[in-house]
Length: 110
Image 1 (cartoon, rainbow, N blue to C red):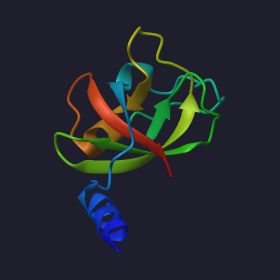
Image 2: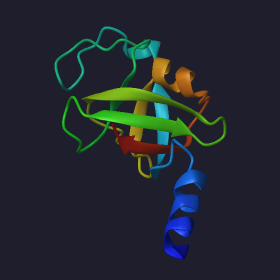
Image 3: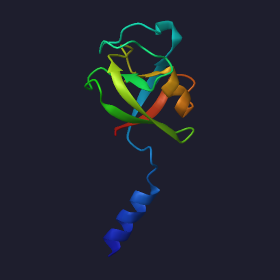
């Protein structure tokens, strides 16, 4: 019984946005209309992301630990190609979680 109480308290104490912590940045209107690596046109207001290895169409829940806000994004591009950064978010996705600059975010598959 003690094991279940401890396990239950761990599950309750874990924030809804918990996942892998990665460094992320965002990009916006400067690339509007350009084709992404998946072939679709980039929409800065959309809820999309670029990742180096995840398959196109992968759904991710991205969270900002500073604000506690999360959003779902879809991988539709490749990148980022900056050392130490694992995820590029569209401006719309960054705005949805309250991200203003490069920072640590949580990321997990939907």
